Image (cartoon, rainbow, N blue to C red; front, side, top):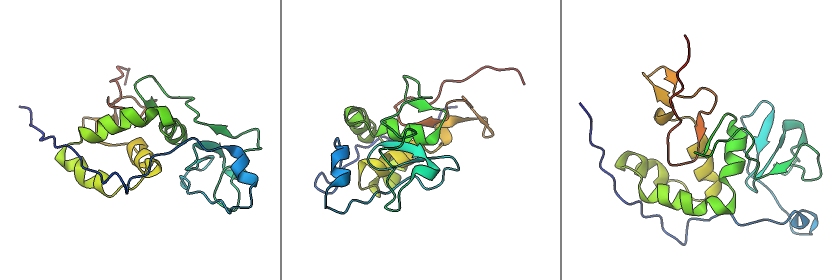
Length: 168
């Protein structure tokens, strides 16, 4: 028996929702004080709200990844598949923050089910949306206790991870 999910368009107030725009690393050295929010939880990697991902030890005191570090990459989609599912949470966030992903994310928001509408309504910007989308969700799980694709469980795209048939 399948359960029907009611899909309602999500009405985000356009003036309050902030989409990520390309940010120039030269802004880093300007006199304007720059601070970043970041993914916080990673043991090894951190993604910041400018789209950079770096080693935890390359995070500056302002919360931003050090753009001059060799470990820092912007809009890094390593470990991500074409369907928008990635094996590493921080790469998922960085990839999701690409300005070109805006159309896809707007489409996803427009199709949000009533359940997700409540969650997405509290999101105020592109970074928060990517943090939320890339966390594992019920769409990443099968049989309530295993990932559909254990190697790509962090998804920002429309499609849930592909079911991986493996030996148990």
